[in-house]
Structures are given as C-alpha cells and as structure tokens.
Amino acid sequence: MRWQSMVQSFRVVDLRALFLALGKDRKGLKKDLIRRAIQLIENESSQELITKIYDIYNSRHQPQAVSSSYWNIGNNINTLSSRESDIKLKAYPFHETLGTLIDLQPLRPKNLLQNLQLQLFTLILSEEQRKQLIKLRSSGGEVQIVIRICYTESVGVEDDQYPSNLIIAMNHISSPPAIKIQVRKLGEEPMRPCPPINITSHLDLNKASHVGYILWYNTFKSYSFAVYLVRVLSVEELVAQLRKSSVESVESCRTGIREKMITGQDSEVATTGLRVSLLCPLVKTRLRVPCRGFACAHLQCFDALTYLELNRQKPTWLCPVCDRHSPFSHLRIDGLLSSILVTAEESVEEIEFLEDGSWCSGKDQHGNAHRTDLSVSSLASFPEGEVIDLTQDSDEEF
Image (cartoon, rainbow, N blue to C red; front, side):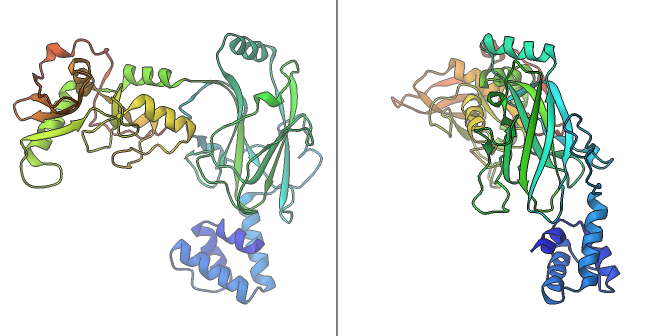
C-alpha cells in the first residue's frame, strides 16, 4: 500500500520516467499510467521497481538527512524549495491579515517509512503583537491566531487542505485539549472546505514564545503550513466592501435585460417581459442586498447578507440559482434591483421587466399591479459605489 500511495502522488513526468527506466511503454494519460504502475506493483513487486519508485519519490520531495538541526525548535529552519516558494494561499474573505507570524513552511515527513509524522515549530509573538492582540480583543473586536495548511503539489494559489488525521497542540503535546480534525477512515483526507484553524485559546498571551506540534498521517503528499494574526470580519463589513467596489451599474443591468428581451434566455422566441422575484431563494424573505456572481447568466439575485452568513458557517460558494462557483471576489450587487427594492412596496414579491423600460409587480400579497418607469431619478437613494466593467475578466477567487 505504501508504494501505491507514492505512485499516486507522482506527476506525469515522474510516471513516464518510471516506465522508461523499466523499459515499458510510457505513453498514456496520467490516470492510465497510475493504474498500470499499481498493477506492476501488485503483480511483480520486483526490487528494481520498488527501488525506482523510491528514488523518484525522494528526488521529487528532496528529503533531508534527519539531524538535530532538523528538529531545532528554536528556529524554523525548514525552507520551501524554489518550486514550493511560488505557492500562495488563497485569500480567506472573513479574515483581514494583520501580520504573518510564520510564513509558509513545508511539513516534511521525518521518516518515510512511518505512518504518523510529527513536526515542531516555534511561534514567537513580539511585544507589539501581544499588545495589539490584547487591545483589539478587549475592545470587542475578534482577533485570532490561525494556522493554515495547503498542498504544495503544484505552483499557484492553493485552497486550504488538511492532511489526514491532523492533530495540533501548543506548548505541550499532551496538553488538553489538542485540536483534532476527525476523518472517517485512517489515511483519508478531510473533505473540503478546510477553514483556517484558530489556535488563540491554546496560547498564553502573557508569554512571547510558544512551541507547536503538528501530527499527521503520512499519505506521501506534500503540504505546507503558515501562521497568521488576523481580524475576523463581519458579514456587514464584507457587504460594505461590495458596496464600495462591486456594484453593477444601472446601465449595465438594463443592457442585460434588453439582451434577454430580444433573444430570450433559453429559446429563439422573443419575450415581452422578464419576471424576477424580490425574495431571496435561500430563505424566501425579501432581498436586502441583491447580488449574484459576475459569471451568472440569470437576472435573479440572492441576498448578499444571507449568502455570506451561510458561507461563513459552511463554505460552498455556490450560486443558489444556477450552482455556479461564486466566491466572494465574484459577487456583484445589482444596482438596478437595489433601486427597485427601495421604491417597491413591501407587499410586492415579484416584478416583471417590460419592453418599454418599465416594471410592474407580477405578484404581490394583495394581487395588486404596479407599474413604474425606470428613470434615473428614482435611483438616487441607492448608496454610491464604484462602477465596475463586467466585460473584464477576473482571475481572483474568494
């Protein structure tokens, strides 16, 4: 099983090198190469095969000789390789980073032949950082020290991902309560999302130096960890950010409506009206801050406050209307619908956009119809924000 795990962590170039060394056909997709390699292990398991797998794995992961300096807890001497140094953690929207306490460091197995691995690190808080932490906490703001862990299998921006059977302890490995990330099966990785791990309550803020212990089950995958001082952002603060820089202009919204009027969203037949609910599809209550993902093709909005709160509790970042991936950085407030919510009566639950640029209530609690011209003057009550061009692509997520 150990050699199968090593092979499954190989890149295509590693797999092809393995088959080339064995004098076998090295063509094929990655999943086919892995399947063939595992079959060789199960059927042949020759010394030449095992040695080559071990050599390729070692050359890729660059293991260091285990010495006392490797475990010197007074210094974080583990450094990322040039490839690993290009890896960045994806921004976490609910945290404002106040400081980096430990930059990304590799979690390196001490002994590849052992299942359970242990790595120590030293966390040192400066006097200024401790005062900042105590001051902000006493003023009611939630400040945390968090550990984040991610893959280092590729180059780029990585999501948080815990290794299997992760345990984190501070100052003494047997000091309760340790932080344990449970999995259903030994050796199985926890399912995403894997949010940053808050270790604040495990620290004595009167002390400057703390020793940390990270234990995990070795599945022959590469991970790195970092420690940050962060301020927890409220949902209201995130919405304020959207209002400041992510408001879709009224004209852009109207253009989208006209295009759908002309072609129809799902057919070749022109339509004379488009209905939009004023209720959030998540909780069926009236929209407060109507928004959607910039890549969403529908007019229907969901409530930003509700969406962010649900993703704070359990991050999925999926649009409740079309299931498209819609992280925080993709959210856009609908400026037009925001203005309509200001003028429409509370009893109105659904509106219909008409060809002449007006709207009427397609459904309300009393069965009354209401028709309003979409003039610019009716939009004055909507908070000003930076107008964004939705024709530009965005590479950011979260």
